[in-house]
Image 1 (cartoon, protein in one colour):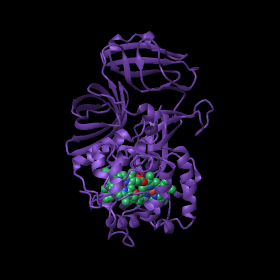
Image 2: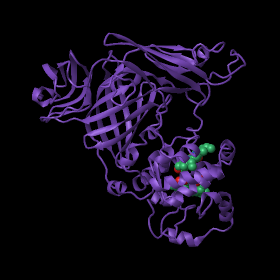
Image 3: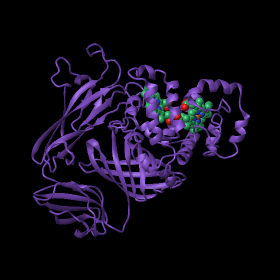
Image 4: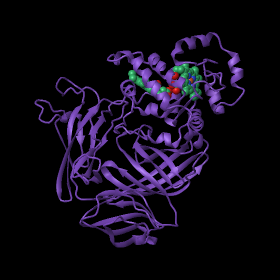
Length: 539
Ligand code: HEC
Ligand code: HEC
């Protein structure tokens, strides 16, 4: 239970002061006010009001002037336990996260941009925070997602700066190339203006909740293994769901059976825990409508093994194409295409409204869920990306008409893998994927009209980094790349066999070679293997 009763936490800067004041002088007046209305929920009152009083505006101080994701609340609660002595059971913690993210959560529009952080996507190149001071003073230690996934009053944004100064005084030292407090002030001003606690989208969303019970079709993509299709069924019990999912990869015969336990937070944020053989998998999905769920999953023991998934609600009315292979169609060719989906025996050619110069020459039903087609594209058709709509059919995804594959790109473009596995820290692998691109209309590389054609199978290898650097080659120590592009880093700790007795950190050049449209293409990118992610593991 709470040790320090009725401690007022007006400002983070006075933590030490407040704690001693509270021990000597518990304020019963605050307590009376606090119990006059339910703040957030009964569990929040029980667990939090021992320290957080009601402010002059009648709100639970600190707590009711911020909004966060379930992950954000979980991290804050963990700090209350770790640094301030809050004691709660696992059930109480779960109830707190549920209540707080329901009453003080994020709207779907607010969460969309920070999905990479919520889903813990380690190799994702973070979007530019669009403010120089934020870039300078806030994203050296953690991702921008950590604060962009929050909404605060101006005062609460200001408290954050003080909180950092009190909790991490070394911030002065590791930012001695700038005046951190001054730079942070400017960052905070920007954040207060753009990430305020009041928002229309939140007012509109709050209180809504999706029910995902029933059958769904799944389309997924797992980097090195490619696309897969599957079936899933959610069964509701109290406020949780169980899920049975089976998937099959399009290339090869590999199948997966997953049993999941999940819950929807804030009415739409679906968080899943799966078991698949010996693996534990976490899923971070958003229900975006009655018929659509989108999200990401990753292995608990290795965040680098991950994938993306979209769920489409099973319906029996209309034809619906949920995946097409390939979606990039070459000019002057007859492209063999497979469409996957539902009720496809009802699909008629007129349902597929194709752009000029693109013609469906043959449509053959394999089953209700699969069609093969021949798509003839005129030499003179326009190179572009398009969506297909029309008729009674729904066609998901974007399609491309292109001239020829001109170059490759590797994703992630700058791969950071992390050593692990020797101690409590897990390894973080990287799934490298090569994508083919076409120059587009202007015939030039890396311009806006370039067309991304899709992932292509590639041959993977490593070269030293920098290439040809004399006397230095980290490759024997830092890890291995498999034939399919999966990079597995070495264990952490000092390697006695390495010159100067170093850790297994270092760089390599990743090389992908692929034959696309009869052309040999090669691309290189920079890989590093670094220390485990200690910051992300602070909760
Ligand atoms: C034992 C005392 C104590 C308890 C109990 C406690 N807190 Fe706190 N809380 C603090 C202190 C001290 C601070 C200021 C320092 C900090 O932010 O870590 C704080 C700060 C906060 C903040 C502001 C942090 C931020 O920057 O967003 C939030 C939100 C918060 N607490 C939520 C909660 C919730 C929710 C509970 C109940 C589950 C809770 N606290 C229970 C002591 C407590
Ligand atoms: C010196 C490294 C460092 C810098 C620079 C830094 N942070 Fe942090 N920040 C941390 C650490 C460590 C935590 C984790 C605190 C915890 O949860 O225990 C944190 C936590 C946070 C949180 C979560 C607090 C909560 O309870 O919700 C937010 C939001 C945040 N930082 C925003 C910022 C902003 C905005 C800036 C720039 C003004 C910034 N940080 C700069 C290290 C840093």
